[in-house]
Length: 189
Image (cartoon, rainbow, N blue to C red):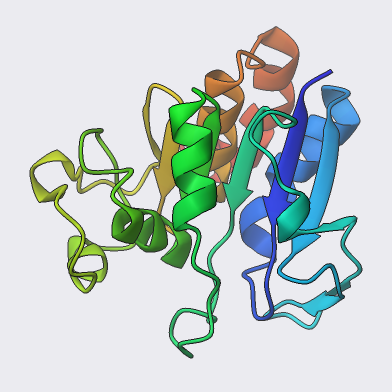
């Protein structure tokens, strides 16, 4: 059973990991673990209070198949966790690493996106981080981008983010496709 850890912090964007968490827990029988910086409850942008399973110090790339980081306002407030060590560990171990919205830019800051195709809210958001060197690999598109085991997306793309994370985990088969197709139906014309 794949183990996925969702790294939450105060003011996280609650809609960004929601579909992925439901799909992996309900339809695909994965273990989904929530974490916060200190293991204490966090409150989302929408006011959803989550009591996490563990603190960030318990996140070990050897113990999980994926690290998923939703965006939110922690970065704009200047109080976001520095994910450099965790992101690097997951990338170096060949594990799935996903960042959506402001978290995609946070991954850009760590350097893990420099050599892979990636996207996010905007290239300008990534370029705010002096350590970012991946501009040539940035893909300007509304859908999520996946390059190997690294998945990035704008905050407006939780559906394709979910699909690309499932593909990176080798979990996107007929059952997942059938269930998730309905969530993207509004985008078809």
